[in-house]
Length: 76
Image (cartoon, rainbow, N blue to C red; front, top):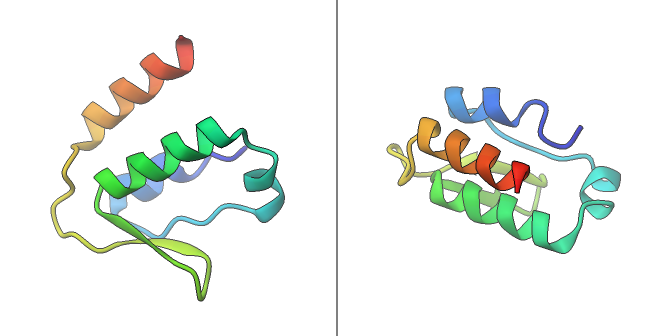
């Protein structure tokens, strides 16, 4: 549920937000993984509207690399 629109948003550099209940129910390790990935992809969190927005025009990690790492970590 938490990651449903994340892939699409990353591929289009769109804003990303998570429902507070979903985010709270996610383990701290998974939240750290998500926030690290978003930062590496050039996103910055805006606390005022609780949305991640892309700040860097060129992400540090390409989406295909992110997807590969993401699915590898999820299978482990």
